[in-house]
Amino acid sequence: MKPEQSDALLAPFPKSQIQQLPKGGIRLDYVSHGNVTRRLLEVDPDWNWEPLSFDDQGLPLFDERGGLWIKLTVCGVTRIGYGEPQGSDTYDRIKGAIGNAIRVAAMRFGVALDLWAKDLDHGIPEASPDYQPAAKRQVSGLPLQTPSMTKKQSDLILKMVGPNIHYIEDFKKKHNITTTLNVAQASELIEWLKESIPKNDPWKDIPKGGLDEE
Image 1: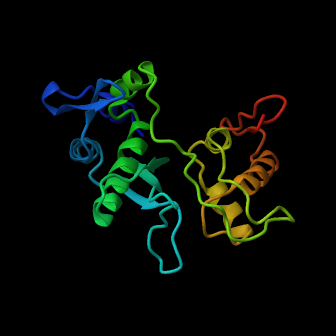
Image 2: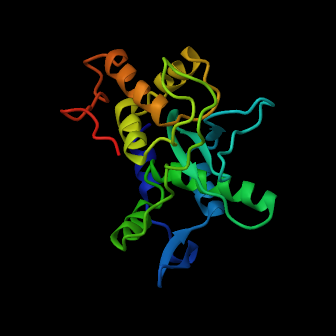
């Protein structure tokens, strides 16, 4: 990605494109999915997104709450985002999850980052990556039914792999995992990443003392 493309993604949105959402007794500024899409098209007309996982029919794999993990590629760089569902109608919830996932993943490129930062200043967290379904298979003797991966695990995994998400895909292929990860599988992935990521990889940033899992 060129510096001018990064700067264009980070550019503040005009006031005419900023909307407000009541939340937690305050009104939060946000940019709609449509305006985020417009920004992505302006910077990279060939941008693309795809689900992080697929179901048995080859369709995007939504978790048990209707949320969706995606990979967003802009200017040749791929980053991950999670979208929570919205609305009461099934199709509205699907569209809402996709739109939210694109907005969250675009924020990882700096799109509307200033508005997201204001949300955090108010103590309103972004879409939680805790929404993960339990896996249906056993990995290296670990229990089948374990809770969804924790936010701390998710954050550490993303920090370790950086833009090199193929490490996650390689691990899932190695263990024939077609769903998202649970706590046990995430722990195994973290240990595998410590051995698999080259020591000179600038994204290999593992806290000393390991992971203090919840």
